[in-house]
Image 1: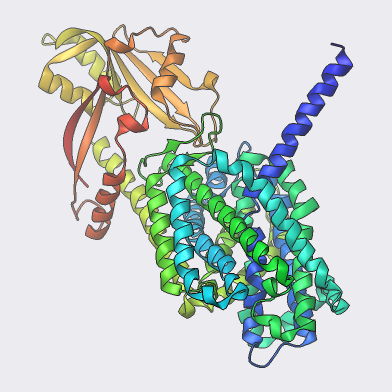
Image 2 (image 1 turned 135 degrees about the horizontal axis):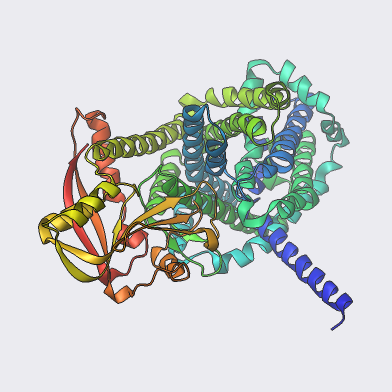
Length: 632
């Protein structure tokens, strides 16, 4: 084969790979934002329903929606934040890990900003599936009013099926995500194009001055409407969170060639349709389609909302994995559902939490109109947090001055703060739901982080330096009996003597021929290459210190990593090796640093954590656990 043929083959392979990622990003990344036209314009019109909406108000509203998409999604996320990556990974916690690594100051602020953003995302992951699926299925009321009573149970059934399917993995389903979502965006663009000619005045919405006119002339009602306008950008955080799965170029290309044009056309079409048919303001999205296309569009919308729901559920799983590895949550059970794609995971505890939350929201609010009032706070709050963290990113990672970073981000922060204020007006109408969800998640993550820190401090008081222990044990006239084989003692502090080693000597009076003090570290990078995973230090003939490093997106498989030790010169037989773990029974102590209620939460969270031998993938028949009671 000639060199030109080889180059051409490589280019074809790269093109094919890019197209696959492009199609996948349309399905996963844009699934959520692609369902916003179902309800965003409808909810923005609702405050005007009694007195009717004027031509200038409709044009101003659509202009505000189009330019909100342009400024927040296009400029902030697509063009800027996709470049603020942590070795290719995006998302609030990924950005937090990067900033904690680079920033010597503001660490408490960054920590709280990170967990607030993560907590708000979990709230979003509960509300998005409930709102999206109910909005789609409510189109059945227009097909035939006889189906009205079945919308609620059908929504719950769809959600139950979706959450039950999570444990099976999304590999097979994800192959259909892209094509279905492409058809959905094309259908939305077509629906808009059908009606832009109904009233060409709507094209004035492309002028941003009309958006400014609406803000300045709508008064208090306009402030309320801003909360609904922000529904147009729900799902924008997924752009950033899914960066590591698809890469920057496919996500950017998908936005400019399909997603943004389809959304803009649909909103313009809805606006023109309402100007020509004011009576359609109760549900402009579905009413602008021909009667023969209504049922297919309802079915397509339902499929699109299921895909959008799957996207935020998967995002919640990824966020939980990052939170576990960064020490914000206990070691939860994480199952990998794909042998080739490490991003496809299943977290049972998070799945149950989201399912219960979604079902409660569906039956508590009853319809998408009521639930839409609860939406927006979590999304706007997360965006404000991301903008604040971006300021520190520009200063530390890109080396911008305070004035330059402030000049770029301040207008964006002011805009998002206005939207947040508008959404906060809906607290009494259900907006308290995402606030309470976020506060609950913040308390959980803060309690776990604080409790773990206090527990480490408490146990550190009784720690014996490892070198001191080794010297004393080798010089002692009463050394324990030596037994054949290798013992690996897991500990979080590599230079201290593991408590489980001391307990083993105290109770069994033995010491193995070879003893390995193993520490597993989580890097602030998403992935750690295998050649950098193992660090070995030979202390004496009998003692070795071993450190294994994993990225916060890696699977912490200790058994697999130990195979790399043989390349580093550490010889051992797995069937002659015992892994020693300490199992702590926690007892609450209100005088130890945490109030009693936080003690109870911390102990309950510790109970949710899975067995370390399972988490670290240790060989089941080679693990020895020794228990101890610890007060916190």
